[in-house]
Length: 184
Length: 383
Image 1 (cartoon, chains in turn yellow, green):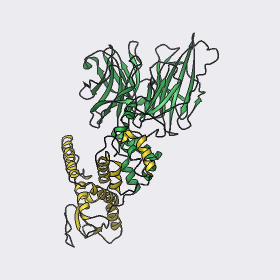
Image 2 (cartoon, one colour):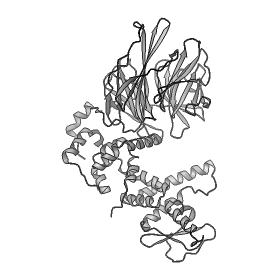
Image 3 (tube, helix red, strand yellow):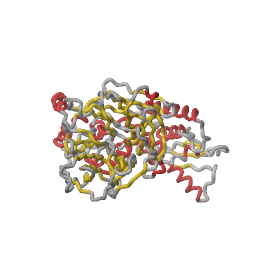
Image 4 (tube, chains in turn yellow, orange):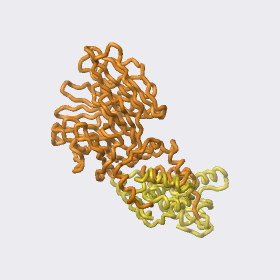
């Protein structure tokens, strides 16, 4: 969905918005999806209030904190969410869509490097993308759930500020919590 | 370059973890220790556990007639409505019995008079014995027969966990009560001087729900009049509720909690009707949610308890007590009106279920040391 032209054509049917990432890539996104990023929504609404930008004109919303690869994933996830303006589906359609989304989510997580999760969470937080944050927070929790203390420290870049004897005391007291943990 | 993750996000992520992971991560660094043991975080984590059924564990409490065992049998319930393999949980205090449970904490007692009480978090392996509070016999009731009942619940107004002990005294035609409440915050008991109505407690246990303790009471003057009494843990006042239907002589009634609502069950030889008080404290909100016909269950059951809804709310888990004594766990599908027995050979023959959920409460309690754990000390690999 990357579009490097400086003046994207305004679409007549569904309104589109252009988002510009930290690495200067432009993404043309449907308004319905972009509005799930509350930061973008806020920016758009602020722009609307000031007479400068009108609908369909070339507003490019800068996202200096988000890299293109990350935005692409978030947009892709946003598209798969039930759209707020969509017609209500019947029960069967809803179930099918749910299954499709689950499959998509599983596929998405499979292809992600654990480190990318942190970037996605950071970006979703910046964009105030609630559903994305919810999903990726859960994915990260699932990922670290059975990991060792050392792995978690390395993953989050945390320095161990315990004295060796303090840490040893914990490991003794809660020995049961350290059993069955994934190998690093 | 590591992206910056603000503390609120770390909190959000950690709140989605099971208890075992969080206990382990206490030693990641001092900041994480402070975060995980913070009382607001513990509340947030508990709420999240309840919403997602995380660490949902059923303790199969064997009755007092079974040979005394050192371990409880327990089984974990997963999000997709499946029971995992049974495992064993070491009893913190041998020969103590489970009386009640709430928010991942289990209340235990010892002795008929229930003077010795303890609170235990099985998933965190911590417990605390309560100070012993004697029963004060009312004057002129020296040779009275007495029964003590315990309930354990959360008082949301004071954010405190409390134990309620109600002792009934019977002598000739007279009846008296002694009521005491223990507060976990103050670690002390206090006597309640409320005037109690002339009604007998007529059910096996008291139930704590949303800051109130409920029980079924039979009027001592008006025959067959059954009411529901509610004692509020914050205001320490009693309230009377009408039952949704007045039961007949040959019907057996009991009170339970289901899905966070007060539940009233009426059993007779043909049907069991289950009512839910859909709005807490509102009598008119009693709603019949289902009726099980005896023949659907295919065997004679004496009574059942409602344990919990399935994750999608379409089924109810019942603890069925048969006349022959055997206990079964049964899923009842509300829509299809069918029962499915949970087949598990490692369940005890007779048991009562105490439900636990992932909770970090009582982290400052005493450790429960499983002797089997001690044996493995030397063989453990560092990780």
